[in-house]
Image (cartoon, rainbow, N blue to C red; front, side, top):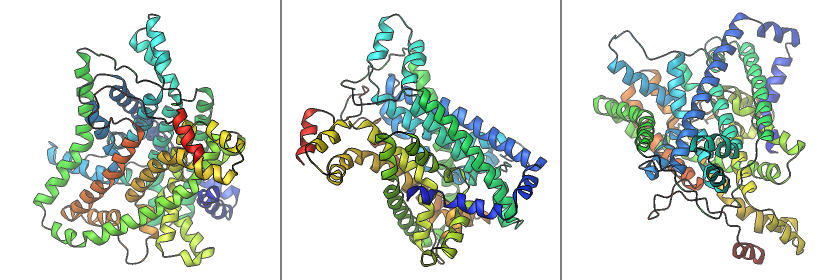
Length: 524
């Protein structure tokens, strides 16, 4: 069921592009314009992903394994840029850059502007899983390496990072697919990528066939990326928290701890400070903000209801796929898991059109309802739920399920009493991430929202589209504030944030694998 939902956009693409024939598709692909779009899109995705890996892995290591001052505060602040939609970030950066530009005719736009904005608001996709993996890794191997005379940098590169390679590869995969599918930032910053060209072909040029052809190329690129990530996953060791019995010791950086503090502060201030300054200036100086406050509640309720429904549907679909991938690795489970990622690389406008076609031709009662919009969210963000469930299930010891089955418990009871409780942390984190991402989704929401329904994202886009930035500011402020709540939950669930009152020492995630917990689950 989950795979069928994820493949709806692909089926729509194959149906529409297949109507023109293979030769027509080849003629549309083999053009200088397509080559330019592919080059720009890939360059942007690769550069941003590389920088996200540097920032995300570096920040995760400083927060979890060093004595950098303020690690507790940075653990949360470094995750908060995930709550800022890319189009809000782009608007605010353009606004602040225009304010401080020496030449009034100079505008903050282009390839490198896109790199800066997308990196600052995409690196949490790497930071969060890598930080969680570093907390779960048993420090014994690192201590052995240090006892044999290896330096701290050598130990980091040859022992620590190889143990969390799957987390690094998974975070990099989410980052590169997010950049390939992003529409808001590249549109505002005028970076000529596949997504911008697809949206323009649909909305301005009315050239649907050209847009669908470009979308099929995105699918092919995604297949190549998934294949490469799969090779990385098979080559690297899987991390596991089931053997962690004590915390890793924080490395004393000496005077360099202040360099780490300065680096983390620079990332946080640029990622969060620029939107904060810009939004405050819009609200203070604008005259149209009052209109927005009057209509704010209806937009917020629309965002909350649609995103919550989308998160529930997504996690219901992701649960069996994630558990199958973790408990029964093989060609079938790997194929199902990879199929979930295909729609994640497509622009929301393509997924939205596919769901419009699906609603009109197959599920007419769902058309123009919140259910179809929630189904679009599930199609787009299913990989986020699958990865969260699979990660939680892989951390839980299968011996508990085997023991329950050996005592005569039925498979359904084993799932309900043992498997489900063990994966609840992953389900909660995945639901929070899907809810957060659905609140920020723009193109699919514009296409599929029921008539008369507004969300924070659509109201924000409408106001900025006509230059009413003061009116847009309250929507942006509330959207970021609401999105910050699930971001905090995700950071808390990952285990990188020590509980209040604990020391600043690094601690592992609590994985309940002791005999007492085992007995409790089996007795239940």
